[in-house]
Image (cartoon, rainbow, N blue to C red; front, top):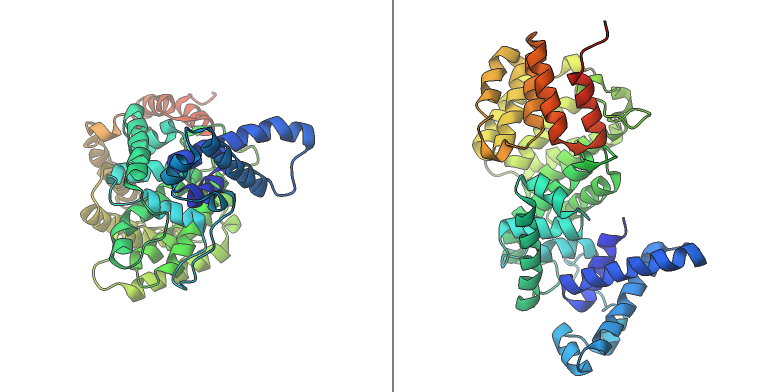
Length: 403
């Protein structure tokens, strides 16, 4: 949980995300060695940050000459051992994590590299988890991360929240990064936990801060609204044993109405600041709002959701959006109307290993009474997912019911 914050704090000192990540890892190793013996400190995050900064001093002393390393880092000894003063510019923002997002999303990097690097540094995701989020091979993601770190170091990119046109240019990548971090927390791609709440909290906090920083950007408010709505369901998405609870089975009394109200406010701000057609995040927030306004599953306005997904598919086409649209169509018009839409996606390379494709197809087949075919699809989906609770849920659906 503390790792991204340590990386961000040390990056502000050393101006090199690769070095900062190594120092943070060293600090974590030191904690594993000392805390069992000395006890966990009152402020673990501060302890880790201090340890990482101390290792920055050790690092420069181990190099050939102290002066050469100082030139590489671009700081003097005092700056290495103490954080720099905060800038007085009122338009700046006191948030190292957000600075790290904007730094990792610098235009010198490709869009894919920006997202992968930020997910690694801020989300703490493994290379495999990022590959899963991107639907690309794991070695590809590993290469992107390594090259991105080298590029930022070689170009001596400033660790800052940019202003003016530079900020606008990087906004799209920043929003995508925050969204992907939230998604990994909302439905973990691997491991024993269905949810990773810390990732959701970090993403939502970053979205809220970004809304304050850029109040005239409708897509920023749209993303914030989307995350507020999605976060409102967190308590109802798992049962007492940690098993996933599907949307139709959730106890909506457990949905957080405060977060829903915040989502409504953010979506209103997005609508108020929009100058043209709604963007992808505003459309997704509108879809989430349809679910939030339904006090019972049967009250969900699936026709409106299907219409919004059609708009989203035109605005930001992707196979995953098409799959989600098919789900909405199945609820609005019936599974027979949606099955051809899903079948058309079975040959899409990006979805070849995407477990939700056979999962959705299995659900449609089950609703059409084609039970054996449905079980085969659920079994295939279970084999593709690496999240233990999700696999168990899919295997239950693939298993014939007891007589």
